[in-house]
Amino acid sequence: MRSHLRRLAILAVTAALAGCDMQPDPPPGPTPVGPARFVNVTVQYRQPVECINAQGPCGNAVVFLGSWMNAGQEVYLTPDAGSHVWSGVAPGVPVNWPPQEEPHRVRVFDPHLFDTPTKGVTAARILVGGQILDTYDEPGTPEEAARVYIDDNGVGRNPL
Image (tube, rainbow, N blue to C red; front, side):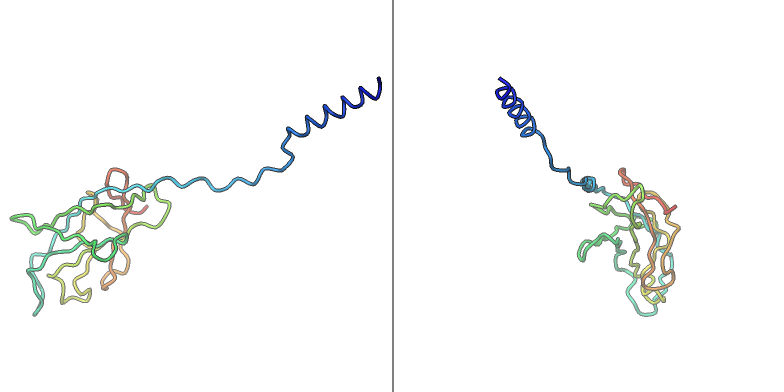
């Protein structure tokens, strides 16, 4: 009888151990990255009244450029009648607000400024998503750019 109980006990322990996971759990990985978010953003640029070019063309369009854009994705702005304001919509701008990475860098090419040291590039007088931009990189050079964050509503935000 004792050997019978002993066999039942061994069988019970073996069955219990077979159902247990004896391997340690792997360390948890990084949290999954959420899906990328993109919005359309309004852009406005106020062009200087005077075209200061000695020989360069002044009638060409103003072009908006953003750091997220690839070649061929630049936005040609349209002049607003009766003013020196150029407007457009930049499609598919990656949302980067709240800040967790570098802000976007934006600028325009203005043919009125072609004969300046910036060769027509400027980040001054730009509104992106309704925000007047006030933080610049490399002002007064052809690499001049304003920095901006974009929220889920397409509203621009200056860096903190």
